[in-house]
Image 1 (cartoon, rainbow, N blue to C red):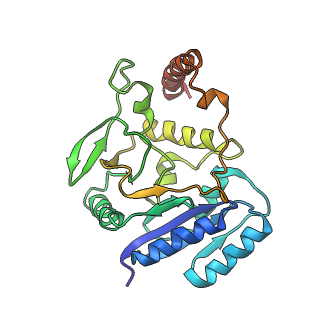
Image 2 (cartoon, rainbow, N blue to C red):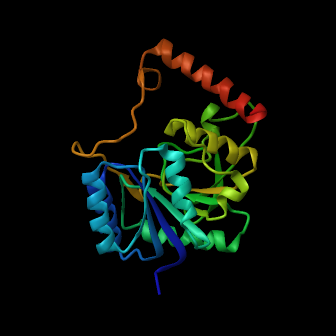
Length: 255
């Protein structure tokens, strides 16, 4: 019987077959056995796709492909469509699990089994959203519309495409991922939907202690962010903060 009975692992992949191999190898080393594994490929180059097919014979996963790149939203949607278990652990191929993740995943699963109102459990992030203590190293995310609340616009980041465990019925409550738009917009629109539909989620307090995001020079990140998002120029940074503060509240209320 798999260690994580009732959970399928969903990995999205695009042109980083050796990163995928690294993730699968580490999970095998940690004895992370799932009821099923689905790898959803977003139209990778032939040399990568051929290697992914070879990996499938070693790690026994189901490969879902598309003839051309169709973006993150489509890649998640078609991968999720192939899941038949009650729960989905979603991870992108550039993550590496650390030993502590095995126990915390089991804890997150136990919390969701005990409380059917929990929609997802997050295990990684760049920063925490608004949270209040839950138990055993986890916090419960919460949201307030008060524009002057702690956290500013960062309070909106209750949902993220970073590694998380969710119910496989997630699309029934929050909708499918938006397709035909940039990856960042896809994540943003799901974030807004999660809040609008009163999603309930947990967040692990040591949010960078369970997984490592690894982008080697031979397989760098496929996401390209522009000047507006990355510059440290104070005037641009200030304008960006104000814009996001207003835009996030507007989209939550009116979109």
